[in-house]
Image 1 (spheres, rainbow, N blue to C red):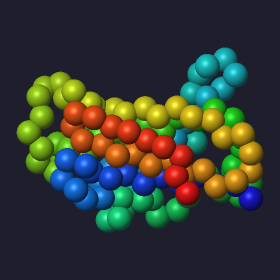
Image 2: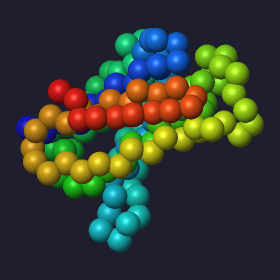
Image 3: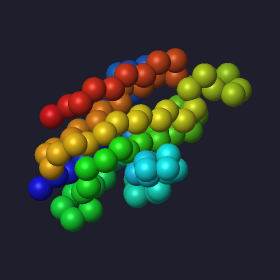
Image 4: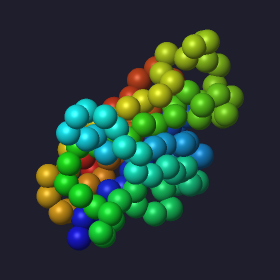
Length: 117
């Protein structure tokens, strides 16, 4: 059965991004977004449960919207107003019924992602 997980690393401070809010959206055929799940990362920068799993898992196009600006404000980072990175959207597709792991490496000035394991 397929599942979707994420992991957020704060590369500015060299640690997991504890407490970052994120939302998962399904991208519909007309391009609109449908909210699927909202989570907050734990002390390890992961969510306590998969974003999707079992019967909830469907192949298709998705977006995870990470609240990076709010996270960096909460940890006391010196940010401009407005911050360079506030909401970080990652759009991706899942084509088969396997494990998709979509991590985010983020600082106030840059981010990257990849398909993890």
